[in-house]
Image 1 (tube, one colour):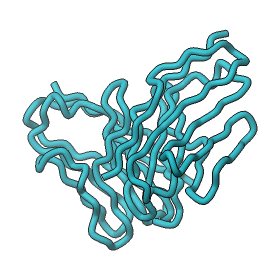
Image 2 (spheres, rainbow over the protein chains, first blue to last red):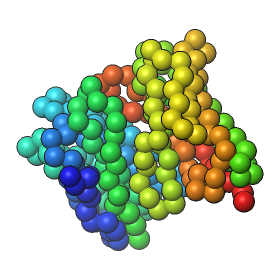
Image 3 (tube, each protein chain N blue to C red):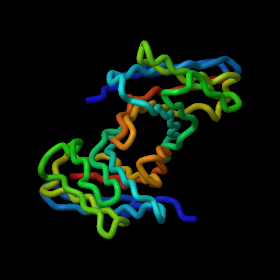
Image 4 (spheres, helix red, strand yellow):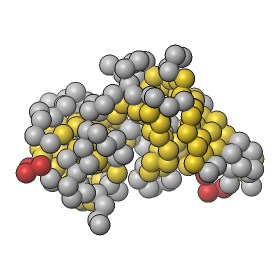
Length: 114
Length: 111
């Protein structure tokens, strides 16, 4: 079946604008993760959704960042009032549940804030 | 919370030689340790993983060892090939929680 998909693949925006990044997990996967990867750096955890449980938001760097997961499937990561330091690749991953630990990553959204 | 360190940050080996990357973790409750390979411009892909009830796991040229007492785990790649060149990330996780990744190791296999 289809893997994890993300859109857009690239996004260029001006400082101060809001952006929305979308993630479509693998069908049936109940766990969904967002990460940020700056150029040449590691994976920075942002937020984790597991089924209907309250999400783990402990990695969100500021209140400008928020995420939703509607109907237990598609997720949207919103960055308000973007700053240049928000420029990075935003990766989404899903897994079939808390007992299944294999994460499948999407291709990422490359965000550039001018 | 969990903290994962990874060494070395860069590693160059001759083709055919072995490569070893080591990670240490801080939370003794973590029980799952995956390794991901990320080629330039690509998404991370799981190459091998190990759970805390196992000391070693092998898959062809790749192996992972875990020392729970010392809280470290290592990736071993034997008979390296140019296509092994990539950035490798380790991670640690407690069941049901988020993953904490190491900063990555850039492996270059020289022909």
